[in-house]
Length: 135
Image (tube, rainbow, N blue to C red; front, side, top):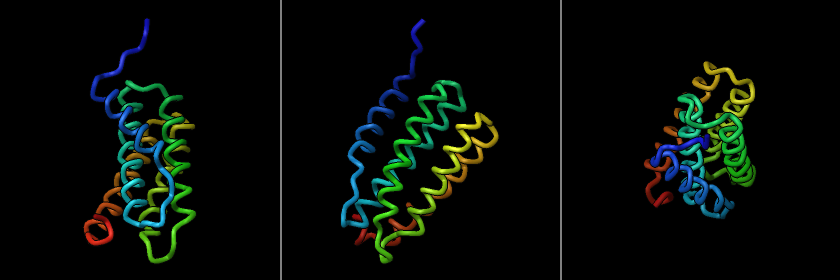
């Protein structure tokens, strides 16, 4: 029997793959912040889909690993005047999510999702506080 995905999950995963596939570091802090924010929101959805059983753990792990790698590249190339702390916070949350998924422990994945959501909120707040930079 072929596994099925919900239409909203399929659409979200397709959009995420396109966005994260285009994740390349730029000299523009706002662009980097938007890419990281998109990857973080996507990863949260991947964790949700794993938690509710609509996504196999191997898919969730590969997806989070890929997005984490892209965010790591951006975090590693940032200048001190850019949203370094917020993006590195997202990267740390990705690390926690990767570890949690590898352990298969639902409670740890839920905690990692919460940490990722908190980091996403902080990055989004930075973007809102710097509208000239993030527009």
